[in-house]
Length: 306
Image 1 (cartoon, rainbow, N blue to C red):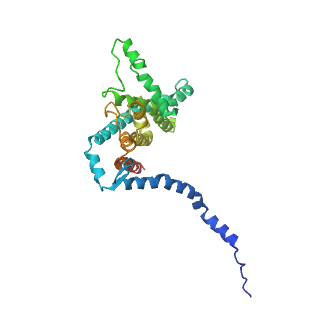
Image 2 (image 1 turned 90 degrees about the horizontal axis):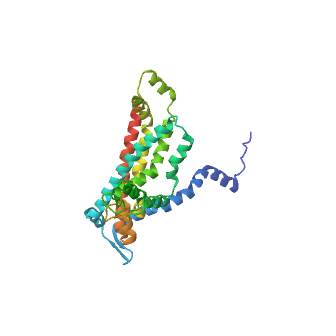
Image 3 (image 1 turned 120 degrees about the horizontal axis):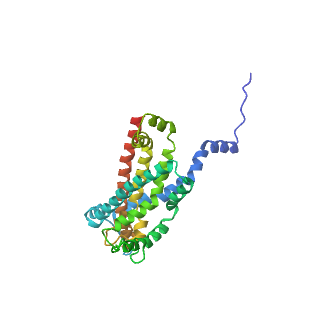
């Protein structure tokens, strides 16, 4: 019996088959190119120029090796900026988690007018940061601000919240708490609403107090949500810039100068681009180190529980 020969595959059909086979990669290509151009290339270029004395105004571009990094860790202002950043993110994160969990627990209960209270609670998170800082700059105003008038009504001397080194960083922390505690509330509230009611009903039948119910039922269930919130707030705390820029500019003196503010001044005010690139790379490595250690611990705890 003669063997039937299959007809030759045309060019159009070959192209169609190739497109069908690689369509997923082709759809990813535009996003991948944008990612490479806007993220990967700037990151590597930043690392490259960190080894140079790159003074934009003087048109200097000289290889200096690790000198920028050595000068960084000899610079007391940079060390101070790291301390200020850590002080901010630790204080703000702890306060936001505590207040956010408390509000989420109240909202999860049968709170009167919860449909009105919840939108009002998350409202600060919806404002742009510049609007938030403008509001709080008025509240902190020494002459006409709410806090100053409240202290005067009590017969006390008003405080210079943003121009006194003793209070400037805490004043910025308070603004961040007001703006981003709602984020903690939303994440924790989602975790709370996933807890079935029968667990609490069984605990109440066994005579468990409200504290024991919170300690042995609520906290274990929302533990992952809390860990996720802490990680995200810590990463965001490292990137603190806009509130400092708008409220204090890093002052008074260098009392509120964070790492990002330090990088901004070196790179865009003094145009020491190589030095600023080295500082930004150090900040990136700090964030990566904290994130990797924290996420590794999270996944280990989850695998142990499983």
